[in-house]
Image (cartoon, rainbow, N blue to C red):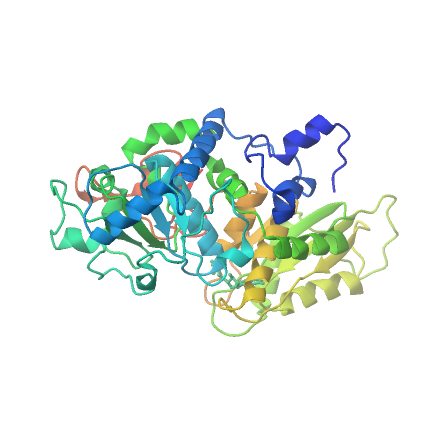
Length: 476
Ligand code: GDP
């Protein structure tokens, strides 16, 4: 926990350099105003343009949010089925879908899309969104009201749905010259989306979508990198994020405040196991191979990585003379399995380190398998992502959105454990990430103007293929 001597600094940092709006009830969301006590001062400041965009968004949300006059009017329009061309307020509705890491990334993507298109973001609460997060916008809730007319259709929406944007394009029910547009469209941006769904990422189709008041979005992907490739968004994005790799970092810190009980999980754990250490190292282990584990090749890989990158001291089997100034290092390991943690903990207990440093190894939970439907399970998952984001150095697993959330919130460029092939540790075992941004796992490879396939990872210097997934895209 940091020491703050000057009240003025304290106030400024409390609002994360103006990123957060003042005027919330502090007790209802302790994390919003306490998070700065657990983080190093952020080197990545929000641009003044982003700050004014957020304040404008908050005004819009106040005016168009749930149960306002405008909202009620637009819900009537939704029920009528036709867009009347009245663009008093327009909305993007985010459907709760997929694992928690995925959801955090897609919600940030949907919010950025809302900012770019002057829409209001409304959040389907799913099973647990209310339990996990505080309200991010002042006064009006971000949750879709429970009486929203088409919520019961959300689960059934897929790429074949009649209301699906891509499907309607495919069947030529809508096109760029359609006059009478529906009052809502379903946007299918899930990894199994098809060519017509991907036209979402083309300026021409953004033109159509601009006339539809309600866009209902289902996605399990961080699609921000492809927004950077839409010409009409380019200029605005460059003003919002002069430092391009800070998109998720800043939007994530703005949007995602752990609810009070999750904040309790985070702060109690931090104070008990991490606060006193001289250095905190996070190791996030997510294995997509089949079988239960722990796998020896993964243990070997983590060891090879931490050794090669000098993240953790080596152990010695002979007796070592104690160093003058030994450091206390805390390793926070997260995994569904407890085997990796036990291995590391025992290694540092049974043997001295070569430089005399003392290493404590901790794992908050080992839930064995993903249990998306359980409340406490998801609270713990969120707490662990957040705790990883409070470390000084981070090692993550390839392909995992759980790790992306931690690196992004923490503002950390992790060392990524490369995906093992044929149950063998790869060489090199890990690679430093180019940026702290998450990877878009299923980007389109389409040139909207030329109407042909193209390598979208080779168009501009700031959108590249990811370190951990060769076909993915990330902002650097
Ligand atoms: P991804 O599958 O790694 O991209 O991440 P997601 O968060 O979208 O989905 C994985 C889910 O599995 C998480 O939301 C948790 O429910 C669970 N999970 C995976 N790894 C861990 C872990 O280290 N700790 C905890 N508590 N849960 C985990």
